[in-house]
Length: 256
Image (tube, rainbow, N blue to C red; front, side):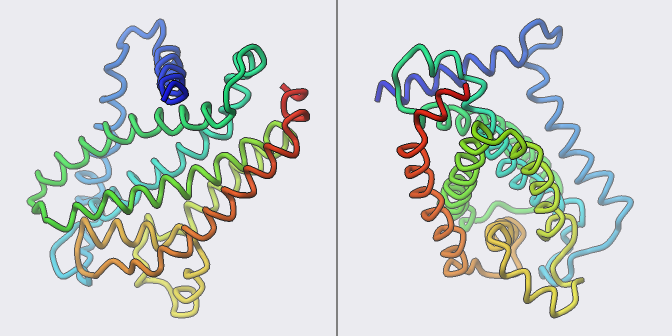
């Protein structure tokens, strides 16, 4: 329990540093999400009047896009935060003895706080568009756990490699950029050729994003079996991370 408290303290410290000496201070936490969500839902809905007819209702392109962006943003932030977690807290790691996993948990806390803010703002706009609240939305909770687990294991793996191999940081930025575009976030799967749609099953993030769309926008059922793919990869990465930490712990500390 003390390590969780330490992780929370680390995330709180990083959070304070992010807005230190800022004139607007904590207000930026809300301004940025409001601008993003309103842009995607209001402006894109007006400019791109395309309706996702296959959803069974007049759901705008802006709303479809915003769902993908919000959850992709959470996924991406967890990975990026974990990538820099060890180096950001290098001084404390060298001076204080605690599990290395603590800094990664702290990174997830930071990303989760930002997600709660932007998701809350998104839900206000979601209701503003006339979209109803449904009992199925409770399924967002287990789905979020799958995403957090998957993103964290990848982020920890990248974070450990970043310490040992500096080029991994830039490489992962390229990977994340490409991953965004090969996932149906800014476009519906239905516009792709059949062969490309079949190939999409190899993308472990696809069933997660597809499930978020299904729960919030309707039109299809969540395929829980398809989520076994990212979960399986997550477990492989989890045990690989444990192996790396136990095998290269000395090298990791020497590189800090």
